[in-house]
Length: 296
Image (cartoon, rainbow, N blue to C red; front, top):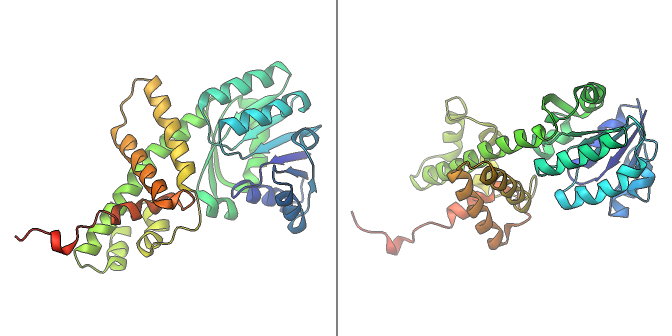
């Protein structure tokens, strides 16, 4: 089968690499940055194409990983006229649920299928092939796509109809942003209390406060290392989608809204491209100078 991979960023690069290494399919790739596509092809088996349309023409499956709605909708304008009949477009971007529904409806009209299939697990998960994929769309199309997705993921689930994948990812982001902010506050508290923070982390990892964030990010947060992973600006985008959807549903998300502002603060500190766990730096910024502490 022919698989077209569109978007070779931090996530898409590794997904395409896993597909290439499987040696089970013909892989073609395209990235808006032509040099990125050429570099990928230098390191992996696959063919670089010069446009979305040329990459997706006659492809059985299309795999995309794009920044936001705007890029996804732009790609759709080239995919929809060129996609093969019964072709399946697997989109791993994090976008609005409505964009997924709209594109899916347009693809159905030309005899093809769309799966909104955002992921969780970060760049490390993409590199290791252990990401969790949450999909929405036609169940038959999902059954056909599942063996493809299995090649670069640790888990894939069908969550419901079109848009359900994005709504599940929004649920994931609601949970994770609160956890990360709480972790930043906890680490800062432990540090200022004079505790051995590494020892504290080890103790908590075996207790009820443990989480993926604690296991994979706590050490780096405390060390102030943020040059990896999922950027602050992209997490702000994701949280913005959550808040827009919640407003449409008349749901209050006060903690998520607060962390959204905290992410904006990190961006204003120059952290737009830091991993978003740099919420820790904002927390540290609220240290009270010794000469301003009140005597007890």
